[in-house]
Length: 218
Image 1 (cartoon, rainbow, N blue to C red):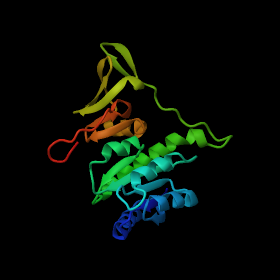
Image 2: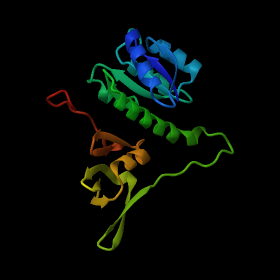
Image 3: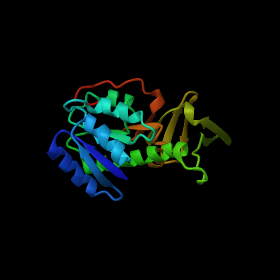
Image 4: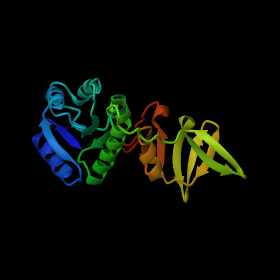
């Protein structure tokens, strides 16, 4: 995947470049110091992912992300920032991930994998004529309850929560237990569900806001 790094601090760009060089399949194709440069470099280089700082001179990262999303083939956007108060705005700007500095390699790899899933989800609209039809994910989840098969539409699922050996599916009509792992569910439905905890995935369509709690968490 081709990556564009956007940050007004050269040292921050250099550190992120080093982290990305250690990830298989990633290639840094360019850098920019503000939002205006990001738009120009993105148009010229056509990156798959843009790593955007939020607070920069001139056009900031949030505005740049909104402008990038208006393009014909928008890249996935991963925000990289030292400030945690812009998380809700980042989701409004359709960010694939929101990473706080200093960025850890593990979190960076998770964010990139999420971006890969989003890119795959966008392909059907842009695939050339004659290309193989993409695989279609499940529209329902199923579980056997008392000898009876219960099916729940994915659009009615509120969240998944891992509990011991099973995953609880909380939906509008109640809940059921499934054998799928949380990791496999995130891989399959990562474009529709947001990991908010190591044991929980929440339907992005059900997120109404973020609230800051003591300790700087949300």
